[in-house]
Length: 125
Image 1 (tube, helix red, strand yellow):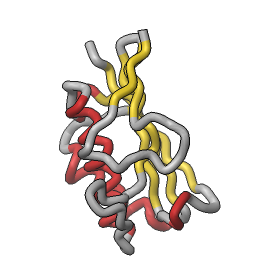
Image 2: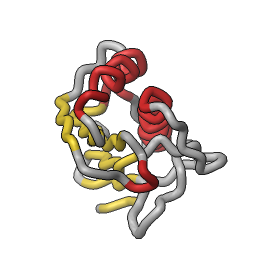
Image 3: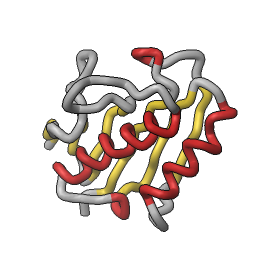
Image 4: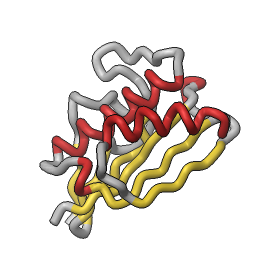
């Protein structure tokens, strides 16, 4: 069974996709920009964008009844690999000792001229 998950703790999708999907015992969280869910504003710094993107992911995890310890995989997309250190600082501060598998990829651009986008897969069991 497939179930769509949405939360006011994450921004509404800016395209034709769901915020997250439950399927096969997992939650697949769509890529989250650092958009403020209330205002749609995008902060200027990569640190603030990363923090908000992770908060948006966390809001969807909470909606599905899980937390960071259930996350098995994270993918981080950045527009410049030199930003990874700053993103890592925020990532470690918010995730604590949860250490999911992770991929970090440099991309040429992101929607809304964002600097970072983060998606996640969490186990629901």
